[in-house]
Length: 145
Image (cartoon, rainbow, N blue to C red; front, side, top):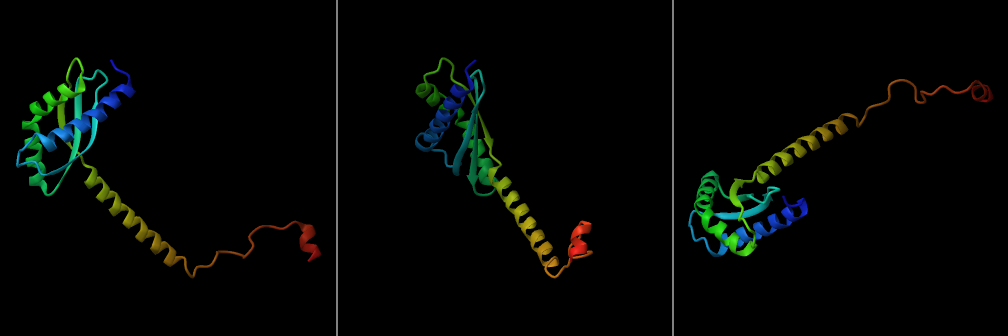
């Protein structure tokens, strides 16, 4: 078992190797405008998970996933050559939900901003309930006044 720092360092290297291999070696026309966002490696350095996003519609995402899975062997052999590990990690590609999550968060922030505006508009001409100074004053202050 490798320590977490070494696994993280190798995962970053895997991310670079996968991106370069897809750019330079894989000539599959099904691969769209793909961006590799993250890589995770298990503590025993046996399995690597690479997250990616694809610009385009659902069909482009599906085609890119199919092409990456079919080119997994070529990418893994390239990793084996460049990593220099005793055992080359197996690869798993997962479509990253980052753009959808970001769009959902933006939508929620817009709703919160609209709700804040409504509260501020409602409180614009409002007055406090009760007296202007709701605190009780000591007897000495009230007699002196």
